[in-house]
Length: 165
Image (tube, rainbow, N blue to C red; front, side, top):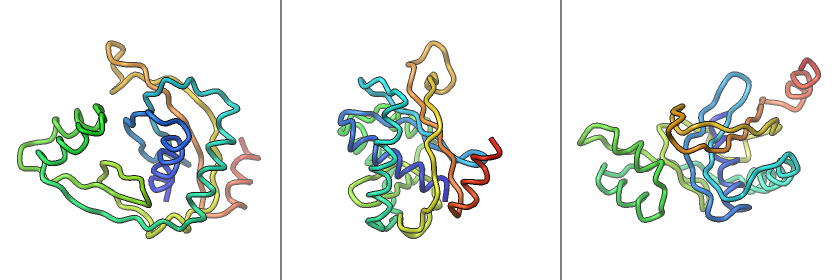
């Protein structure tokens, strides 16, 4: 659920801030984050706008679909899109590796999965903070912008967590 929510947030950011490049978006304890490379400098006032766009994507109940590509095809696919971070991740995989991607609506991402069946199953989330993060934790690599969020199965669980914090 949380990893699916990371894809929804990435989709929202791409739609709101064209030209944004995607790095990684894993689930973490109580939530998720996604790292972005964008000309736009995220500020706290962006978070409600992103949440609103996420609500629209969730309301569309977009189906998560897994598909695969041979490694070379995936390198070409992401290279043509200018997604240099995805190209680097794929390049680091062994030759012959089948690459899996997930698509929901117009959005697709390099991903092992799994995901919920569709975005309509995602319920309670809150974008919580913005931070800087070096690509792959290396200070000699580009500084990316990270958006953190929390997500739960229900609004009650989310509210209880936020109150506890």
